[in-house]
Image (cartoon, rainbow over all chains, first blue to last red):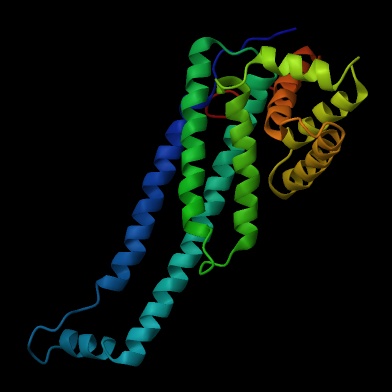
Length: 177
Length: 75
C-alpha cells in the first residue's frame, strides 16, 4: 500500500537551515566583535586609553587570546550540536515522508535540494571540527554517522550512477532465493 | 526472500530508525553483515552492494503495513 504525502516538510526544514545559519554567523560575529571592541589609544590620559594600554600588556593579551579561542571552541561545539539536531530532523522527514511513502516528483526535487544542502553543511562543519587542534574526535565521529545516513538518503532517490535494475540484478546474483 | 538479504535490510532499517550514537552502533552491525557477504563474494563492489541494499530497503518499506507517521510541515 503506497500512501502519498500531502506535503514533504522539506521547504520548512530548508528555511530552518537558512535561519540557523544566519543566527550562528551573527553569534560568531558577536563573539569576535566583543574581543575586538576593546578601547584603542586616543592619545590622552582618558580611562579608555589606560584600559587599552592594560589590554595590550603581553600577559593580558595572551589571556584575551586564550579566552577568545575557548569561546570560539565552545561556540563551535554548541553550533555543531544544533546542526546535528537539524540533520536528525531532515533524516526523520526522509524516512517518514519519502522512504515509507510515495512522494510526488516535485517533492522529490525538494528532497534532492535539501539533502544536497545538508551534505554541503556537513562538509563545512567537518572542515571546522576535523582538526587535531580542535580535538573533539567524538564530535567528528558523530558527524561521520550522519554523513553516511544523509548520503544514503540522497542515493536512495538521486544516484544516477546506479539504477534500481542494477541493484535487482546484483541482489539476484548474490542472494538467490 | 533470501535470509541473508533480509538480515541486511533489517539491519539498515535499524540504522534508519536510530539517531546519533545508537545509529553508530547499528551502522557497525550493518557493516559487519556487509563484510561477511564481501568475504563470500570477494569480487563484489562494497559500494554497489551497499546501494543495492538501500534500494531493497526502500522497496521493503513501501510494503510494510506499519509505517512511521508522516511528518507534517512545521511539526
